[in-house]
Image (cartoon, rainbow, N blue to C red; front, side, top):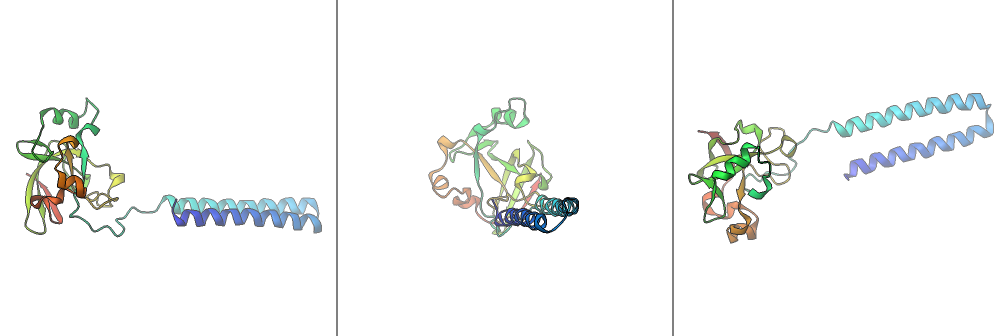
Length: 197
């Protein structure tokens, strides 16, 4: 739970305690009808404040906070694709595992990308990096928008822009050790573009 949510919960609890204190104080000094009216007004005001706090929490825009790590290239096991009716699953039936453990078709690794690149499962594309490296890929899966930044190109949790689909049992040891496909020179560099062919 974020610090902001904890703070907001604390504010709500303090308001509830304050309301109870006011009720007790009023009971000692005022008529019951007046007390009931004042308590109802206070409760309405507090409910409105709580609703505003909840709306503020829910409407927070998603952003890439402090992740500028487009060189990072994560991987996912191809066995995570389980829906036999999906295009992703059918594509895996035509794929093979190369010497690095990548699932490939026609020597192009299968990768998952965000919707912001405008690509679909099965599309061929070229990934271009800032250091001059470029490599061909085939889109093997699409990242959910809720897991990517506002442009839907970069994974929020790690800054990755193309996630390789792999056979974990055959994955290259350097990649496995670093947790990053960019451990291989051919795939290092900040991803600046992924363009369909």
